[in-house]
Image (cartoon, rainbow, N blue to C red; front, side):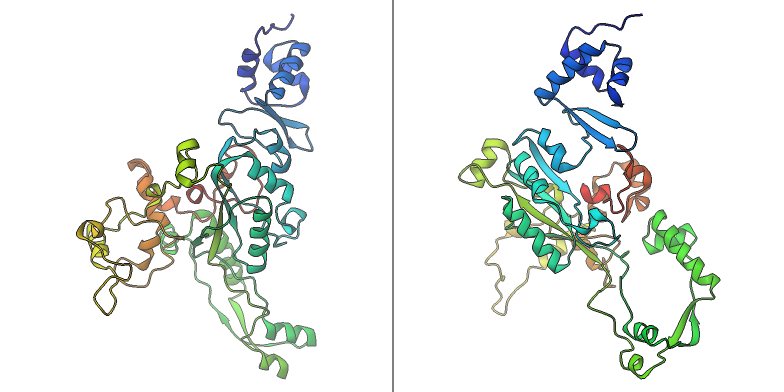
Length: 402
């Protein structure tokens, strides 16, 4: 039976939205059109930059044909963005490689290429913001900021810092390494005890999501099978001298930064840019941190810092200026998860920067009922694979992206 003839390119475009195809043959079969018509319309749509074809898998010859209408484009950004029109993107939020070589694999050993960053800058609209999550490590951060400047981004803004509780230090004990080099066996003088965190209540107490709690529990189970972690003494004089020291300066990671930059304005001022295309500005009212309570809100008004002369350190304030904003605290450059800044005082110091509270305030009532299970430092498998198979090891949670 002959294939159904498609008479309009828009009809073909509508059918393309059905999904993922491999090879021209599968397009013809799925869309029920003849091969010549499919190729003709496909080339026409590509020329108009209405459709992008991007390889998803190098092993099964799988491609994504995507219409540019709030769709997901898969691919290497240095190549995929070449099919995106200049000055057509409103915002970039990305989590590039940090150059750590943390997993000893090729993509993780280098910072983003100049080519990829140039494409990011090109497709952004003038005055649009770009957010690059990044390592707080000084050498890498300096290099990354320089790269962003080199491709044309304005970087004269404050970074955002996210603080959390679930980091693990990557450290080497100098004393133990010295004993290992000398072939000296350390004396075991005891075992540290591992406590279980199996129950849901304990998971809530620890502020860990289910995935993290399971990983931690697996580690604790291994320690428990061993009777605990060996407590040892240095076996040589050199090891005794350096007992308690660690190589370099590798603290437990408890903060991550987000580099904030902007494509340069095409108008004379931020005001003119906003009037022209709605950019060059930040909608910060949407980012205000919710008040912990009504008392918290009014205490904030009364807590204006005073100097010794009885004047505010930021100049004079009238009653109107000092009235609290019902929308919450003006957003700071620090975000806090897991109540990480709890200082023991009533209300906790975390409330000034509480990303969890902000996120909860944005949730519908039904979702708030399960909110403790949405406080996730890492995304679930379902969240990662929502739009396709995602094996990236350091995917950021939707909450932070919001």
